[in-house]
Image 1: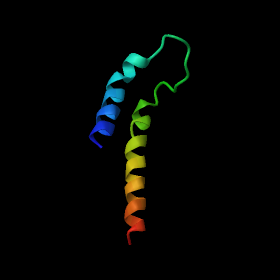
Image 2 (image 1 turned 45 degrees about the horizontal axis):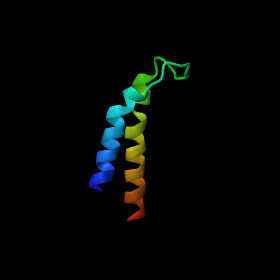
Image 3 (image 1 turned 45 degrees about the vertical axis):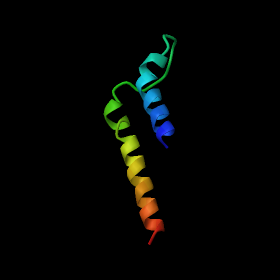
Length: 54
């Protein structure tokens, strides 16, 4: 588990370095709601796990 966490942290830290100068598509101006998606997904998974343990 420690290796998985360390690998994930390293990938997140290196993400800006993996950017490329070529053309790409992403919605400018959507950063506010796009940053909420992982939090909503985490809450949904936690809710499903809690629902399954009832």
